[in-house]
Length: 340
View 1: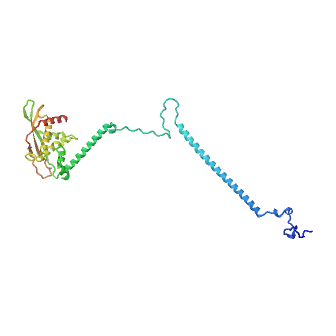
View 2: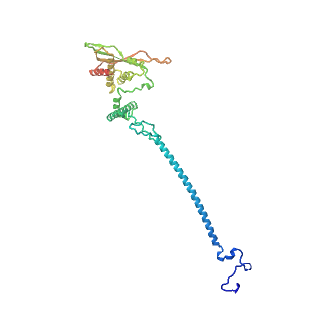
View 3: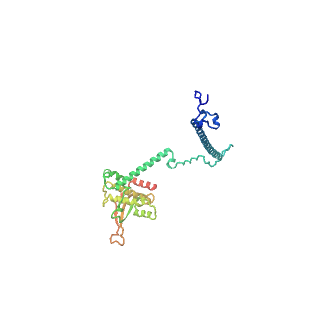
């Protein structure tokens, strides 16, 4: 049976020229099963891709590892520098191992700043608690009195209002006679007269005899004390002058009291002249003033040369009656004169 016989075991050659097998080593032992196919090529391609991916992953891991190593080296360098600074700070503070007290050294850069010294209290705060309370109360009383005085003076010089109408008596009792206000300097016609207040007295000497002194020009004495004095006192400038104005304002031309303050103004002026007489030693040592008489000597101020105004230059005298001096006024005058 030849090769071309048909049968169940007949082998068919592949299509080719003249039905021959291809030449080459593959033709001798190659079978249809050993021929490479598309599946095998896909598998090889996937293997190649997998290897490439693994290689790239390995390279990436190597790069990450190197970055991590570099950061670790940087952190170690920073830690090393910190340790160096700490060691430097520790070395700047000297260690004392002996029993003696350490010497004061300048504080290091990291040493805490010392607290500033607390200043000692001064003024009222330096006093004990009880003294502080007393001082605070005294200041409060002074402040209240000052406010009341300013309020009284304001109401006294202010135009008539409801308060002055209801409490005018209380205001006058506070103001007169020591704090009376005179606004004539700002009037349309200011004072143009020189007024001298003079006084004389009847005194009882040590032998019991009564003698009369001459006139003491009290205004001239005040003027002499003011001349050349850069800081003259209020009493030298205004006490006597205001007392005389107070008396004139509360008495008529016949020296009769007008209003309720007439007797007050008389007693006030009498006490002032008694103080001056005792200061001047009227009647000699040991003499006692029994009665006094006050008078004023008024002279017009001459007008300036360019003025055509004509005024009299003749002095005008106004004498008051004799006033008997009570014993208590004499005692009070001597007490005040010795205290002054």
